[in-house]
Length: 155
Image 1 (tube, rainbow, N blue to C red):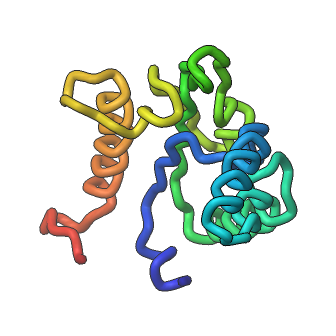
Image 2 (image 1 turned 120 degrees about the vertical axis):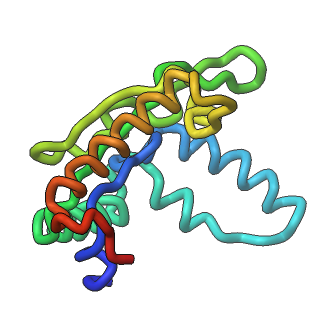
């Protein structure tokens, strides 16, 4: 793990529920209905996605330590549009307050899509694609500045 972390320059999060989501309980209801049909019972994943769960706090704490130790850039994107449920109820699956980790020097932005579509880019001209690719380009530029004059990355 440390070997990988030492080689990571940045991480873009797209709608990641760092602090959980109220929608996890809605998902739990749907999941329980599926369990009734399939007979499988495993709600641990949805429990861990509830707001302020111990699992998310633990993951966040370990990530913060790793990020600081290895100087990993982070950029957290949140959705701008609500996701419609049942054809009429709109909700933010991951609100902006949960999509940001709250770290010092964390960059935050938005993508003008709902949660389901915020990482599905159909063409280069989409605003979301432009925003994510601009972040990645800026990180590549920083790496090129740090790279010896050969201009080659070591992979």
